[in-house]
Image (cartoon, rainbow, N blue to C red):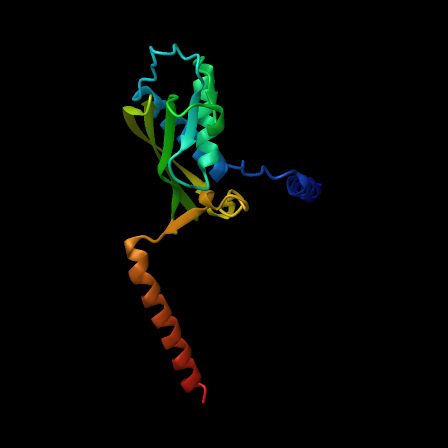
Length: 203
């Protein structure tokens, strides 16, 4: 009877669902959080004021350089500016040459990862630096730059899942630790030496 109870308990434990590891924030979500923090900080460093027109003329939001993530930064900037009550536009043909302009530039944006050999986890670090240039009536009024950084630790098996197939700027760039650079050649040499030894010892 005792054996039957033990066997039944083992069967119940085997059939019970195994809790799945929660999926961490995707690379794009992590970059969005960091970019939003950088945008907020950069806007605080650039006083947007135009006494001449009282902001009746829309503020032109434009990019200074080309970048695959410009759409993300522009969207975050537009949300913040509209929330503050400023009229904006992204159409350069809709404003005059001397209209107030806010140009943005992605100075740095990316995600790096460092693998942990024993645990199999990956230390993920996200960095975003945004530069802003505010001009009015064709003259430079203010410049501002801000940086935001976020980091976390994710299971190594989730690394590929958290990538984004469409937006390559959100891929994780894995970095090798200094000891790994020396360990890899040593391991390869040891394995090759063992194979050569086995080959000749079996002849």
